[in-house]
Length: 506
Ligand SMILES: Nc1ncnc2c1ncn2[C@@H]1O[C@H](COP(=O)(O)OP(=O)(O)OP(=O)(O)O)[C@@H](O)[C@H]1O
Image (cartoon, rainbow, N blue to C red):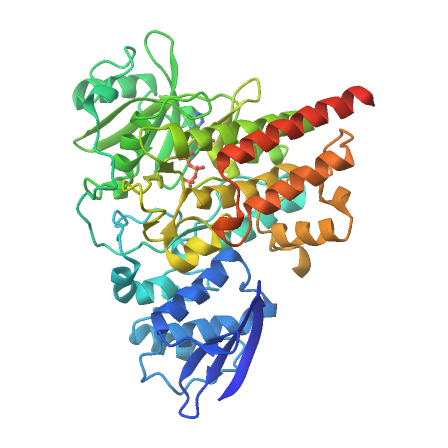
């Protein structure tokens, strides 16, 4: 075999080898990956982590991806070194299982959002998941990426954002239509905890509540619209007693059955009560409507603030407090909720801010409960989340633990400090993966260059070093090396104290 396309992802040297009969093999650190499904999965994790992307630099991996992941033994005649896949080949792949629109670098397969209509299921065993999703793992990765809907920071970053997100945004390989019955890991709804807010009469009684909601949003009027996510559209509504709430109305294609994202979100939201988590006030799930009513958080998302969309830039202390709030919210989910809850989609657009710039974590569409068996450290489940924030170990092994949230938090922390998105494809090659760029700057002793240029505060070098070290620890490649969220919160608290002292001294 002639080695082709050698590439380095972290500590791993990756190559696609072509055998004399034209078949593709994946080699990692010189060792052949025997199981194609696993190999395909590994490739997917490289794309998911941003190591492989669809720019000209790793363009040829696009072809390698398509060939390797669609190779059933009969697809042996493709030329490995072709930098682009010719249309003819795409067509052939299409005929043999991997669709042309599944091309990881193409645009045609882009979904508006990550939540596939049929995506309501989760496998408990990665091995079970493998055969059925072999092609889905690889070919359907991109369709689950969704185009960003919000405007980015000022001039050029709008397109930066759009591009970054188009190629590496919400990543959800669980696109099959399979359903699984409720598992022991799932938290059953607890009716007593579903007691609606007194302000929303008879939650669950579709006629009344939908009518109320219709009135409160003036028939889901566009002028009440706050935003749109994968699940549906979010409206601001004023109830008859004056209470302001957020109404999340499911898209029609979210009607996928009992274990879909809707019930997932409701079951989890109903059980939690923490000031840094968006509170569920009520829901309705009948007829043609699925609606969640949550507390309204008035001051936009953290991402919007980092983009400068709300005027004044967040100062350093506010950023530290936001990070602490998120750490507290996640600590609560991991340790103090009735059962361990793993959020799985920690990212800046899921952090809502109050008028006093305190943070509330929202969007529990992907959240799920941790292992019920105390002996078990992880649950095995399909990969969900948003690329750029996704734990590489989870991507590789399907093993989900609270440490996956810790990883995402590390990425978020760098985002808070730098205001850069986790992936910024419009930047120079060495700056595209923000965590990698940050790490390099840190090691070169150029920490200040990492700081958001819009930040006006003088930040003490020691404080910045500690904060970045913490972010890197959180984003360590393996979960053993990451701190717990509780430890992260404690460290952040110390860092904030030190920052306060440094400001007073100056
Ligand atoms: N409780 C809330 N209070 C105020 N605004 C909210 C609230 N929930 C959501 N929003 C607004 O609605 C937008 C859409 O929220 P949603 O959670 O549905 O999607 P998202 O997190 O932006 O995207 P995705 O679902 O793809 O992760 C948010 O960006 C935010 O601006």
